[in-house]
Image (cartoon, rainbow, N blue to C red):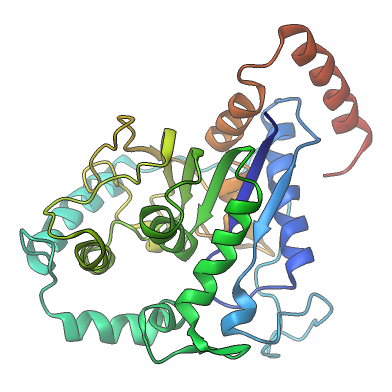
Length: 326
């Protein structure tokens, strides 16, 4: 069976689809080369939905930082030496903060306290997420369809198109929310071999509450959130402790196992993204090239392959890594 990496990006406007897909592939290839995994040629598809909420994409040609279509954080190769250590003290602080936030904002049935405050925060700081959850925000191309439905359909169509492949689904930021909704309710028959969430806000109380509410509407009352049953081998959650969007980095205690005994396995990683001296530990490119992601993707791609075929392909890919730029 053919194997494919499928990615879905996160919130805010993006460069055009082809550019963003190219940059994701570059980051993945960079991770393989940086951590000495011989893989250059692989099948990858990006689910692009930014144009639903932002009709005019960011423009790589614009150099003026004041221009609204200027790309503040483009793809930029990382440095072998630019891997700061993750802080143990920061991790302990975040653990305490997570428990306190859950106590304050979540009830035992996963309903939310202070809903108006939470909605105000989302509306003010996460406009794309606000548009996703609002029922009065519509797809400009199809006024009969909400923005949420349009975004979900992009992922559904791609998953169904490659349903005969072994799928490794990589979801960044808000993309992990879209993917969880789709896998739980709308594409249950599409098997996902492996799910990777990177820089995910799924652990935030307001997000957990909204997921719980939607699941109750769809399948009735349930107290605990469960891993979607179509994830058959593993769910791996990657978070940099400096990433404010993934501040609740521990999803393993938020989602129960599915029928395949799959639940989130959390990995604290280092996102080494930096551009012109400015670090951004939330950027997808830094997550895509980290050591843990490269190892997981490489293992998936070589699993169940003929040993001789693996040796030949590794030699071919190693040569490609030598002669080609990402």
